[in-house]
Image (tube, rainbow, N blue to C red; front, side, top):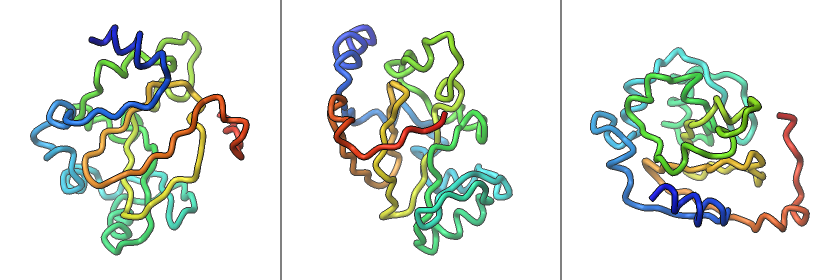
Length: 169
């Protein structure tokens, strides 16, 4: 149940991998939220923030993003708010009830995650994200529609041992 998840899993603050939810998280029309679906429904002229060869670019047209992706270039559309950029996608993707009630959404003070999640990530094979700390205490989840992702998680008490820089936000 959701109550058990909050009491035992979320409170433990440990990574959890759940498999087999794709049919419940993506609409049939979205083909499992596939790359082909995104190419069809996202406006080519829409400009979004991306990483190209590891460097952040504040804006790139989706047409150019998909061109770089097709060429096998290291391009990554990372953490782009669905609400801000693609609100019509909400009809095709669901958020598990387990993750709707996290700290970022329970607090009375407005914060970045409150209005920016969920977010879309699309990356070329071999794309990487630098090591970072997700510092907002959210019930972050990632729905993998295609491909693979390797995660390396560290215990929360070890943060001082990591070379980190806090975001300004």
